[in-house]
Length: 274
Image (tube, rainbow, N blue to C red; front, side):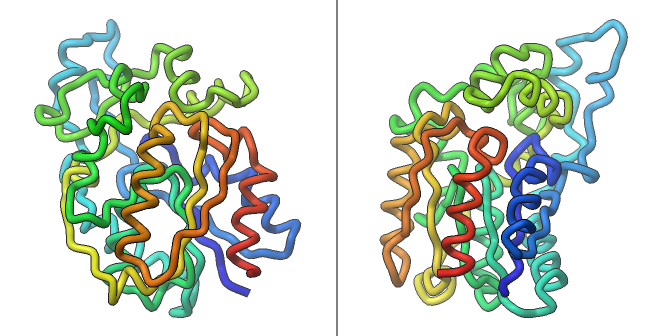
């Protein structure tokens, strides 16, 4: 049985996978959720987040304490996590959202540790462009992440979000999540996603990354990574991979681990037990 490693996206933590780990366990599938560098127990918030009274100008300019994290450094951490959890044997790795570039780079560097990558509404930069280049593409028009930003990423070194506008956060990330659960998730969000992750471009080769089997879970009601951009990412994956991308479609917001946990577990089980 392959171990499943679940990697969250920006501003979240390993906590968001708890509905999935429980369901995988019920099906006899071992899984571990890990924290992306700069998140979860590794999150560090700017001091101005907690200032009383709150000063939005300082919050918009204070350098991020996680600004030094890059896709390369986060991939190095993930490689060690995969190696440890799998005991050196290949694992199935599930990547949500902005963990996509980290997982992609890790698989390019150590393809033998990856039995399968399943992207869940995730960025998968395999064309040589930085992930940040995809965010402003026409295919991503209408995304609701940009209105959440409280600072210029070039100034603070992070994608820093406001956490006071719960309605905007729900619409962006949790549009079909039960309201009480969405509120609980919002309370757990960190505020800084290291800009060095989407800002780093890296090469991806057919011989290394392209040899790793992969699939993609499309979220067709996603307001953070728009469906047309997801389709473009799938096409680009196909261009560098030995086999076509297996695609699952969920009628879901950006957070199917909270809104569609049974269906997402089905998709994961399909690639663990083909």
